Image (tube, rainbow, N blue to C red):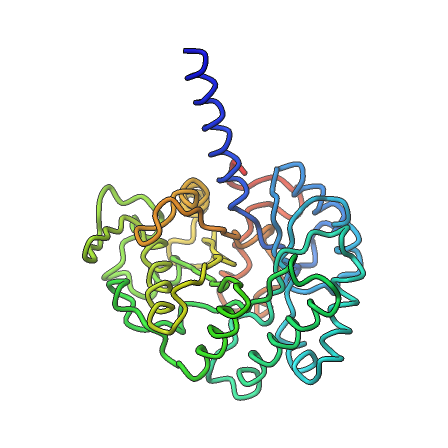
Length: 339
């Protein structure tokens, strides 16, 4: 009996570790009332948030504040810097030295996200992404960090078509995504994917229920062969896996680099719905999806704070300003999440 109890305790402990380590939080800085970076790092640590997505390294306090914190970091090369790092290997090496090498090993870099949600139709940025990925990857190797840091890019669900049911999904612009997938396969890096069930729901409330979008459906909503879907998050993620399989990327893992729900500013953007979504996604990601059951989904919640300068036009709905899981002024949790 004692051995059985010890086994159960160890199993529960391992499950808790798996779940907590699967969830990080995106640290956006588009606000004029946000805490200083050293305070934010303390807040991450005090709430047991072990992973951070940082969209750019240009706050001079943030990387020094992360030294010795043991927080794993996904660091972004912002879209505004894609041209610079794509232009030459020397530029990429300089960027990596300044923003990564000079802080390693004190800062635990996990990924470099080269660009965020670049559209294939963007004639300026789209041609730069693959070259920027290649140059940054080479720079990581040049600085001796190849085995420690993976290089990828973050896409959104608009690149995927025919996503219902998930097994039908495919990428719409193969000329853009195929070289990226080839790079990720070659370097064994994950694809970074921003998933928002909220936007899918508000764009199509006739076919997508609020319950399906917030993990509260009482039963299966979508049947897809042997796979049954009770929540939209899994359906969207498995759609991306199906699209990867059709494009030569069946071996790739997906990291959910953003997901969230607004608490104000739009249809069904309420504190209660946001609380349901965030609590349920944290509880769910350790379980995997129907296509990949039992495989914990590394997921980053968007975002740490409400950012009052995300939408600067005050005549428009302030939806983008209300995705925070912490209040920037009080630094208190909005939803009492268990990280």
